[in-house]
Amino acid sequence: MEMILAGDIGGTKTSLAYFKAKDGELETVVEKHYLSQEYKTLDDLVRVFFDEHQEKVRYACLSIAGPVINGTCKTTNLPWSVDAREVGRNLGLETLWLINDLEANAHGITHLSPESFEILHEGKPGMRGNACVVSAGTGLGEAGMFWNGDGFIPFACEGGHTDFAPRSDEQIELLKYIRRDHQHVSYERLLSGMGLHNIYSFLRDTNRLEEPEWLAHALASVDDQAAAISQYAVEGQSEICSRALDIFVEIYGAEAGNAALKFMAYGGVFIGGGIAPKIVERLKSPLFLDSFLGKGRMRALMEYMPVKVIMKSRAALIGAARCAMLKSGQMLATASVSS
Image (spheres, rainbow, N blue to C red):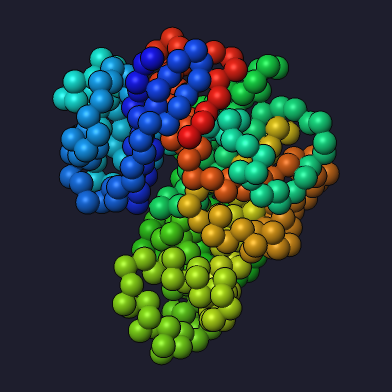
């Protein structure tokens, strides 16, 4: 029974796990989570996992937040430059594959149970075709899933860095506000942890809504201000936080719709990342779906496309493990995952 290493390396959190692979099946042996920012290099992080859990492993596949080019990646939200061959050699692995984290998510999605999703829009039953993933977290990741008639073939892209397109006068002012500090305003500047904070700052600094003194003190005392803004919004404690989250949800719906059109995602639009499960009730509001469907003459086409929130955070880890099994020649068509 072959042991493989799989990893999901994000800008905030990294998950590493050993899987046993046999006859097209995967079984989780051990799984650990680490704060990515606490390590100078990917090698350092993986060595800690190896030291804690010593197993004989030849193959590894790591998903990473950033564009992967010829087995190398300069991470978008971490100060790391990663070369798969060098990391594999340093760690004594026979082969290490590096794939984009959203590509890994796409690989893992089809092996999640129906209970792993919250449905935002049913779409038309029985539709088949391409699908896509749009995931807001530390950054904004996107990936496509090409339907070949038998199944999905995931592929990476960097759609989160395309130009932000405002849809209202208020969002035009938001764009102008962000441009004071960034010449290029991508969707990631609005759809991410920093994005929610940017929206909040816009509302505060342009005097659209007042920041109460208690809230200013509360935000100054926490490391993750975006998480706090989201929490106060969901709990109904702050008008400015609630409005910031509403704008965030509107933009999220619009960009999910943009991706759906570009990929012709009749097979589904999957909303991933660490933020969506925490605000899923807000995503179920008309704000998200109205923005998603609001594509003018294409609205009728958008109605066909199902939209689901990925509630389980292990999709990328499972996807990386499946890639390792596939690439090492052990993948069978009926692969399943148990943990």
